[in-house]
Image (cartoon, rainbow, N blue to C red; front, side):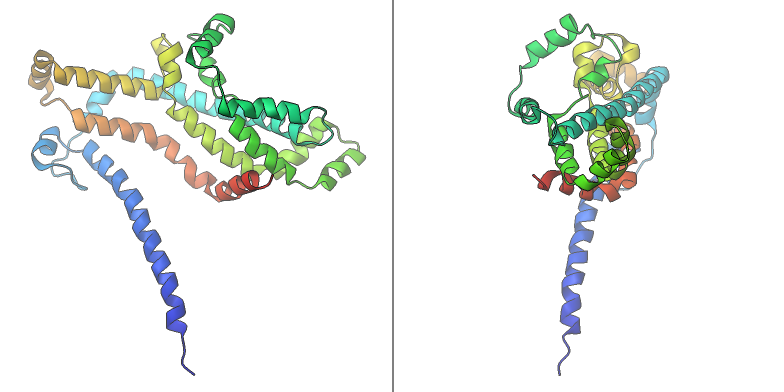
Length: 297
C-alpha cells in the first residue's frame, strides 16, 4: 500500500507557516516602532525607517522625560486608576450579572433590558458632561477617571451568559448547606468564574490604560493627568514647535534637531509597555472566558 503520511503532515506545515507569517506581521511593526524610538532624528530624515537603528540615539526619550516628575506622576495615576478601576468594574459588573442571571430574581428581564438598551442608545456628550459635573460633582477628581468605565453593558451581557452556564445544582447544594447569597457568590460563583473574570479584566484594564478622553473633558489639575492624555499633549506640543520656525531654531541650537518621529515612537513604547505584560498572564483564560460568555444564550 502507498503511504500518505507525507500528505497528512503537509497541511500542518502550511498552517504553522501561515501562523508564523501572521505572527511576523504583528511583531515587525512593534519592532519598527521600537527601532525608530532609538534612532537619531537626522538619520530618520536621511535614511528612512529601519528595523535596526543606523544611528542610535536616546534624544526621543530624553525629550519625553524632560519633565520627569510629571511623567512619573502620570504613570502612577494611570496605574492606580487601572488597578482600582479594573477591580471595581469586575466587582460591580459581576454582582449585576449574577443577579440578572438567576431565575428567582423578580423583574430580572426588565432590568436586563434597561442595561442592554444603553448599548444601542445613549444621551450624548452634553448630558453626559452635565451629569458628571453638575449633579455628581466629579469634575477634577480622581474618581471621575474610574466611574466612567465602572459598568459596561456588553461586559454585563457576557458575564451574565457565563453565569447561566454554571450548574444550578451547585447553587442549590450551597443553599441546602445554609449558605447565604453573598457567601455563595464569593465562595462558589467567583472561584468558578476565573476565565470570564480574566477576560473582562483584560478588556477593561486596556480601556482604563488607554483612556485620555476623560482627562481632556474633566481634569484640569495636572497632578491628575493620565499618562495617555499627557503623552498626547506632549505630541501636540511637538507639532506646534515644529510648525513654529523660531521655536524650532532655538531648540535645534540647544539639543539639535527636534525629535519629532523618534519622540512620537518613544511615547508609543512608553504607553504600551506596561499594559502589554498583562496579555501573557491572562492569555490562557481569554478564549475560554469569551466563548463561554458570548455563545450561550
